[in-house]
Image 1 (cartoon, helix red, strand yellow):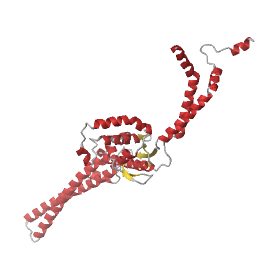
Image 2 (image 1 turned 120 degrees about the vertical axis):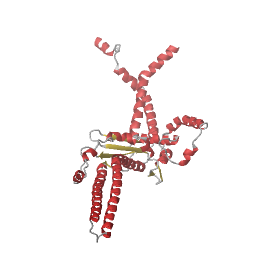
Image 3 (image 1 turned 180 degrees about the vertical axis):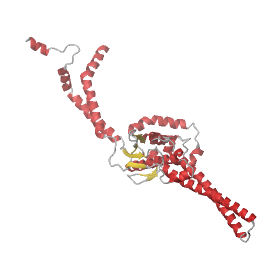
Image 4 (image 1 turned 135 degrees about the vertical axis):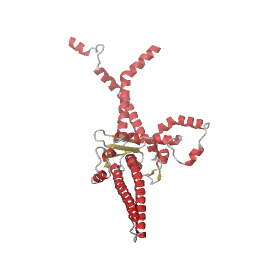
Length: 368
């Protein structure tokens, strides 16, 4: 008898009576079910209110600059011309770890404004800036939350002078963006991401848009623009050297042709003469022609080396994963939203059933 009394006695202080909790949950099962149904309805509303987003990812394996330039047979020409090719190789300051910063920079984003994209749903064409500012949709609660701020901005805009001359040019200046352009840049920065795997140095570019065709088109454009930026940087010095060498070559070629012409004219005009002064002048003109030819020959070799250096400095990219039009949206996950809302509603109902009613009853008694 004592054992039965101990078994049915209430739990001591600090202990949890699981049987009592289960009894309360069973007694409040209808409330829990109602709250779960309400949570499911809320999850459906939220899931279908969020616009679909499509993500396209490309992966690049850039060429890692390092070591000595491999110019093959041109190395012998370099030694003949007295050029040290080892000194032409310098450390690369544009490492792949800087690529995400380049992609997120304002000048890089403004270059995308004029890219023409085509919408998959109705085949319309428009620039990226117009698509971002006019076609991107947001959930209804975002519009409701932003309405007061938009009204405040419109009201303050009445007292702020607009730069009509700046707007009328239609040219985007990364140094001085308008308010609309700044918002477009911010939206693109949120939707375009770049990352680098530090082990493999593989660069991943991801673009998220609400239209699958726009996402794929913009991803491919971002990839090519990044390649152009890196190529421009790495070949900039080599191209300047090529231009300088080309000018030297043109000048040496002109001097050689002029010296050759003077020598030929002098010999033709004085063929019948056998005086020593004639021979001396002929030797002088011949030496000038030989010297001009030697300089012309050296600059020609340097020109070939400069062209090879430009080719050597041009990076090569291996596209590991190209851009493709996605068939399924990447987000939102309606199932996860539905499950999450049902779980939160059920947990809230259970917490109210177990503890909320007692706490509310305690407050009511204290107020009395």
